[in-house]
Image (cartoon, rainbow, N blue to C red):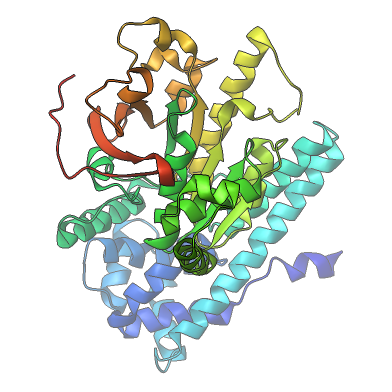
Length: 447
């Protein structure tokens, strides 16, 4: 038993001291260390306090050396008689800062092992307490491990100073980049300008009546994320099969008429385009899951295992089952949709990527004179509107009026936008390729 107590949690006192010593003798290596370590990565309290002091001094661009750090610690009330000799010792045991990268790696590794050990004991305690069913326990256990993989502790609260540095750095980056988009591009510049792209951790709802091109629009965005941003895209298709989805992607990417692809009535030139599209698509990292019985928890678990994830697309909300896998009807169905939309927003926040979820609209708009969708048309739940950061509606006048002067022109209506203004964007609809494009000719944005 004594042996167990002595063993303690994994840590390397030497590596911790070497990291601190390097920062004290060579201020130029501090920025590299700050990028990779957090105060809680230091196991020994004295080391953690010194790092925390250097961290705050760095944030406020103060000069950092043995004397200034000792002075700052004194000011913060964490200075003891042993502090100054210990700071001198740290500088003496570190002859050079050349190997600071190796010391940082060691400290991070030990911190990671401690987090794994803590998560393991939490999971064991959870299992032994016997509360909750097995599926819930598994989900909770996965979340704990995933939180470590994401590099943040399950419940740690972040001081505002840490968040401020991230926000300032982001603003600086945007300022220098001029018109750099804060979020992921949709591939449609007019839509990007309106919603500032798809933001990390955003739940974006794309809703329309059947036949308006919801899936096409979602695939346009998925192609753009995979091609332009070079990100991994996860598509959960609850309605179409994998083959149907890839056929649509070939039509959009290669500009091959969809009808020809469906019937197999292909020309020589079509084969050339198909080969080119297939070659382009095979270089993109797009993952497709067409299991119609997936729950949000399943999707979350699958997405956590993907590296470089940039976007999640779900087609579509009303086909999803809630975590219990039960099907609901009437009032209960409303509750289920509301639960699902809440879980999707949590998933977007956890994964730190935009989640684009497609949704059906009720028939209410068809009874109105002006058939443009409104937020009240969202089927089954107002909770969807509440949880979504951005709500986009698609509307094509020529779908309802054959003699419409807006032939093959779609309206993308931004009905809700947490990051900016609402309004309307005109897009070109190319039905033969099931694709959207930007309009060269602008239309007045009369409401």
